[in-house]
Length: 96
Image (cartoon, rainbow, N blue to C red):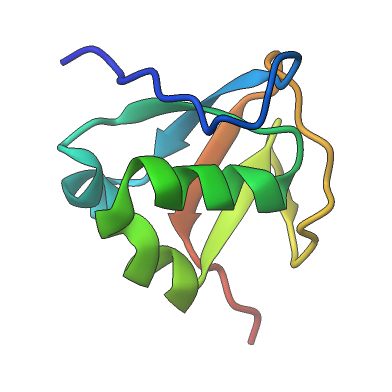
């Protein structure tokens, strides 16, 4: 199934990001492994995912880990993102 292209209406110039979903999130995104949204930071990416795929909202609100180019972004919603980044959303990783 092709990924759905949805804009958030925030205007031109916002990068289109490719986001890979961990298996537990795919059922909330119409079974897609990869989705695309327009965003420039981790926070705007989460908001765009909620707008594009409302069924993801409870899982995203419960907490997910964002990996950008193999680096886990701890809690920053201001982390800049670009189309060339490899972005994965996965079950929240917790330290022990």
